[in-house]
Image (tube, rainbow, N blue to C red; front, side, top):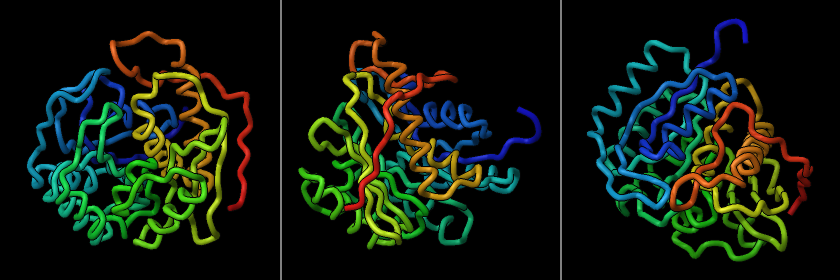
Length: 278
């Protein structure tokens, strides 16, 4: 790589096991050739078996980290991950309202892969009311989409499409609801001003899926930082995550749900993806 790289900022929590959170974001940015900067929101005690403790950092410290980066680096895109508490959500929303967070990708990290709650009810409401409207792209999985809509998770492709459209009505420019299942396929549903599209790919048989949500959102953020459209950024993120899942599918790393691969060259997916209009 030659020349000065573009920069992206992640505002998120840590994962001491290295599979998700800021650690996954930085590895993903690097895989795209994007310089990663960080504003840490919380420290977690975490491994492949679960989240054992969470220590949120003060909201003013999160803002100070973000402001220092934004004043010094030409940040081309921003990702939010685990924001943890309502004060931090509102502080980040205030930055977004002032136009400080370009090409904002919001990964609403509400529950860990192991099922541990990562955001309070008050913080979830603040996210819904104050932050979602500033997103260029919102990237919930099906469980998170249900929580944000105060509804049950989508059980069918039709419900997943309806929920993606309903979330977009809350203000984001685009929404991709990930992790749906339709027969042998995993399905992500993308809602934009052009309509709702279902993006299919064959299910990968692995339990090494820790960090998929963070990695997906970080990949989309990196692609947006590099100038991609939302549609192209989502397509790139899907390919990147599938490669990371395939590369880690045979790993035996940790005693729980292992991480996806964040190595520089994940295996390429030989299966083409087939979008279908819903």
